[in-house]
Amino acid sequence: MSRFAKTLLLVLLGLLLGSGTTVFVVWKAAAHYADVIAARRAAAEAAKKPQKPWDFWTVEIENLASDLRSERADVKKREDELDQREARLNLESQELAKTRKQIEAMRDMIDQRLVEVGLGEQANLKKLAQTYAGLSPQAAVAIFRDLNDRTVVKLMSLMKPDAVGAIFEEMSRESVADPNLARRAASITDQLRLIRVAKPPTTP
Image (cartoon, rainbow, N blue to C red; front, side, top):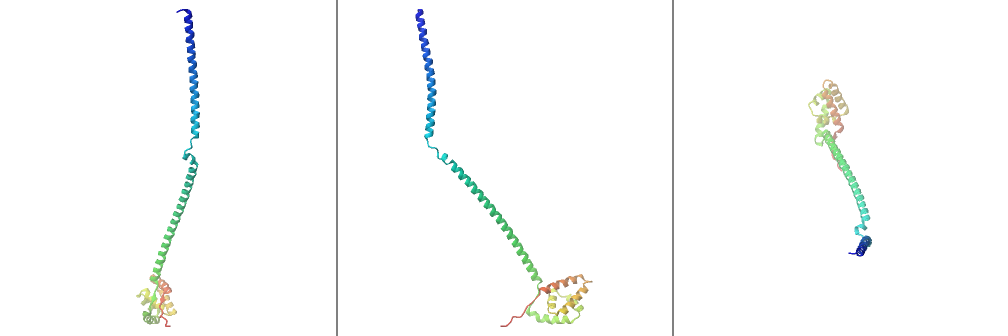
């Protein structure tokens, strides 16, 4: 091969290599710009698409959830207040029941201590009361020792105050040797305060 031919060949190869490099650079730049354009088009398409429903209602849902939480807290507060009120009512009911039982117990105790002179026994008791009132206080106290308190109370309720006072005075004197007699005198005095004497019905 002549020198001219070799030179021509080298020139052609240089042109080819230069053209290829230029094509490669141009192609690479074009590919980059194509990607940028495609990304912009995709973003534009995405912007044109309608938002999802839950994207629109996110704020409203949060507000609704907040309202529900607030209402739930109010309901819980009212339930707590009702529970406290129910507890107070139960406590008051228990206190009322306790007081009622105490009153009933006191009523029963009063009924037990209360002496009532019936119409059927008044005539006999009056005769006995007159008899005991005619005795000396010592003799009356000696007899009363063998009688129960209710009978003694009935008899003394039909006596005159002077006779009753003399008997109590004698019981007090004898209580120095017999302390039980003083306690019995106090019990009889208390029952005399509560005694009831039945009255015959009035005729119209």
